[in-house]
Length: 314
Image 1: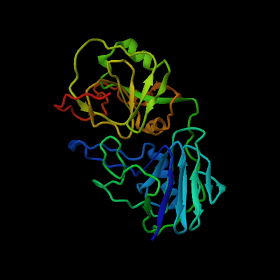
Image 2: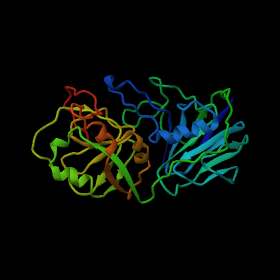
Image 3: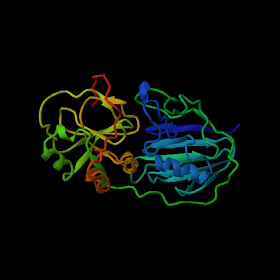
Image 4: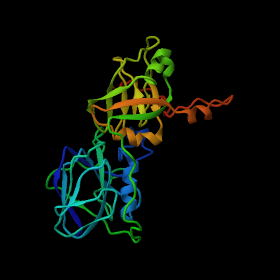
């Protein structure tokens, strides 16, 4: 049998694919890889379908042993990689002999790396996905020393390249494009200007659910309560403290604090690579503004319809 034995999970390692879309109506979020682009790249390198399950490794420290010869790729946060004790290149196709160990060290930049195995990881699926959702508890458990990860049959197609350039990952400061709203009218005009001009810092309260940010407070224009409504990855929700929380892959399905802006989908992967202590600058996405500035154009709202649930998230 083709298996991968987990020797060390590091600070946090989970199995992830591209998540379980279409279940928000029953209270189940998308989840899936926090940096979906890096997972897709890892799978393409080894010839898998893009949504095959991989290991998402948080801040390195992961080690595993191949029971049979395996073909793997490591993408995402650039980290030292060794195969059988010898250095190997990330963002490339790697051959792991039977009995050899593959180890991922601490990344120099970013937070999350992805290990894809040709054939994909075939842990049991829940609601059509093999992803671990930390908020709901769905999917496989957090990886632990001694876990055995089954690997599926190799796909018919072979890897066609030896390597591919990964996306550049910011070191100390990351710009993220945002679309204001849908609840920016709950804040003073100065609050939105502050969000778009002042830097924010990622705090130690940072995980797959989201990242709490520290920086200037975003003042509300008045008082009141907002009915709970749908949330999406990239939403910047502002609790009463005035300090925004940036939602990531395992965010709550609904929330009752107003969302002042939403990170555009193409920048959510970059948001997933933020680590504590990094600075973030939010930049208005001009493309979206042009698209919605025509007379009669609807204001963009990435949220689901409001629900009757009055719960709060922060």
